[in-house]
Image (cartoon, rainbow, N blue to C red; front, side):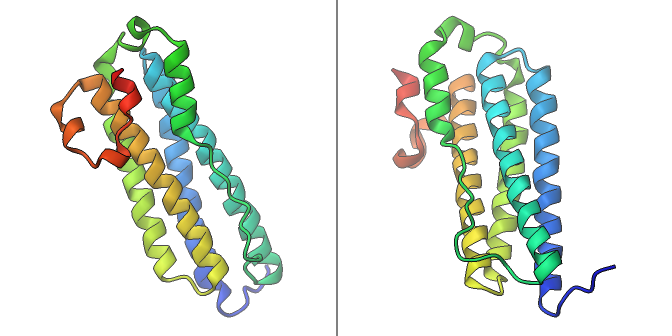
Length: 181
């Protein structure tokens, strides 16, 4: 068994927490996308699943570095997420409204997905404040940003599907107005 150098234990435990949360999200997104009969929900959840896999791969890569050298990799994390809004917008434009509006009864899946993203955001916010190096802090901040984008995407999709007036009361910078045109 490898000895974890002093100072690396915190990071290693944090990475395990992050990996586990990403894995839970991945399982939920794939399972829910398969269950859903709504094309927009499927697209959103499969897109999120892809990002969760990217996050897990990066966490695994960093964990390997921690296990072998006891050090956090350099400043550049190389973590690049997809722009989920662009992917959803392209899908939205290509897909007819009647298809997008079919089987809206799965909107509760989006609410649950929002909860996963909120938990992830809170975890990365917490881990970022406890980071022991600038590289670690940058990594958690990037993950936190991506989780926030995921949450905003899900919230826009939820409001589109449920047609609630809450959408209009949100911060305008987070509202996807193109969904209303």
